[in-house]
Amino acid sequence: MESESQNAWIDVAGADQLAAGGAIEVVVGEHILAIFRADDSLYALDGLCAHQGGPIAKGELSKTDVGKTCVTCPWHGWQYELASGIQTINRQPLQRTFPVREKDGRLQVQI
Ligand code: FES
Image (cartoon, rainbow, N blue to C red; front, side, top):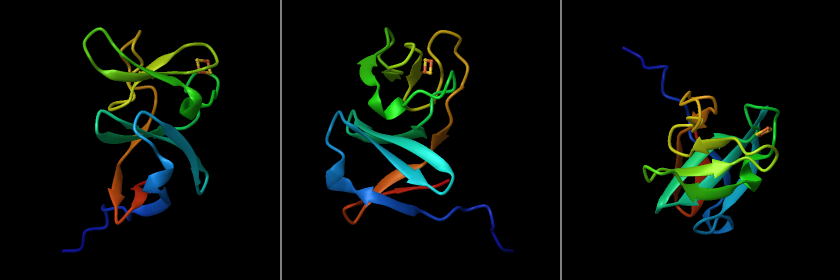
């Protein structure tokens, strides 16, 4: 049986371009992604805010009252949990997330 469901890892940047607590914006095909390094983990979200397309990679990180790390869109303040893309007010997964990893000094994502 062949498995066609596994997406390839796509190299997007050097791991040293993303400091702890920081974010970078990368373009992968027709996608703009925001990649964060926080809490000793990597997170990749759609780089354009689900509200009106604000630049998610330029948002500030903070903790929700239940300890989840979230990013605040710089345009109008919508907040999304990094791990799930859940919008913190309406609790809906409005912001798409993507698998991301660090391998051999490079950042890689799956689309
Ligand atoms: S565009 Fe992000 S909150 Fe409005």
